[in-house]
Length: 318
Image 1 (cartoon, one colour):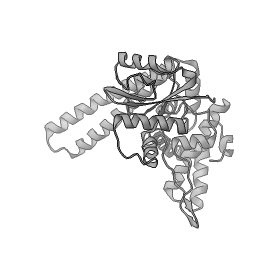
Image 2 (cartoon, helix red, strand yellow):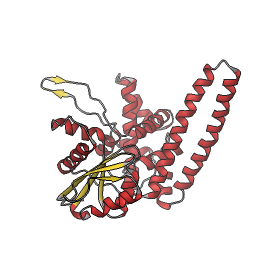
Image 3 (cartoon, rainbow, N blue to C red):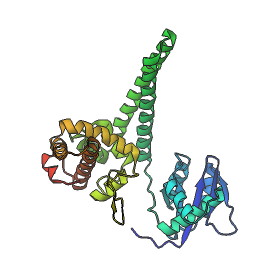
Image 4 (cartoon, rainbow, N blue to C red):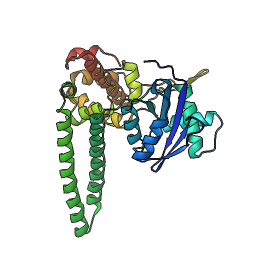
């Protein structure tokens, strides 16, 4: 949907503060990142239909602002900090302060017109649960590695006790994820459709629902680029470089990686597709990446059409 914005507000978010560029001249340029500070900022923003506000993804400090702004009807986009920094370098702006960053974000917003973000409280709850499960799994892997290296009996008992605790926490989180997914008819239907594909398990399906809500709403090129499994050209003049994937959502890509490994064995479409690539002498890494892309495109098509898994989906090309 196109909007005729004539005001662009850049907000540099930190743990304690919000530095803002683009408000009326008499307005303050810094607000506390508290409920009161955010409420004051939102009251000073121009009308939603005429204003686009932009913040960088900060790993969590921006979430309350995003939720409150979108709930209040404001148009707010969350962008990749790397893109904003590259934009600043292209403008020759090498200095970096909070106010400079806010100004650059506002100019980036006016130039690129990023898509405003929606907000769904249940979607955010699911995403947090998925992230927490991933953190616990990483912690458990580290502790298992320590257990293998421990020579002290006391240290080994300590590590094993912690692993047992982590296992219980992981089970609780996984149970909460499934309960949340099944609490909504639309989510339950999408979830069942996804995990009905050979190679896609419950947690992979939940991860896709939490961290790739666009699945089924984009075309195959867009969804592959969004995840980071689309090959990009590397040509210049007479040089022809090897195509490579770039960027995207790493957490979703990691989930697809594990799903593709399973699908190569248990999914007849992906297994046959991988065999054809291997027969052509393609490297194993390229084959697996292509399988990830093929699987993603199949899942995207299924959610778009409302179809369930069927081997006829083999006709879809990555």
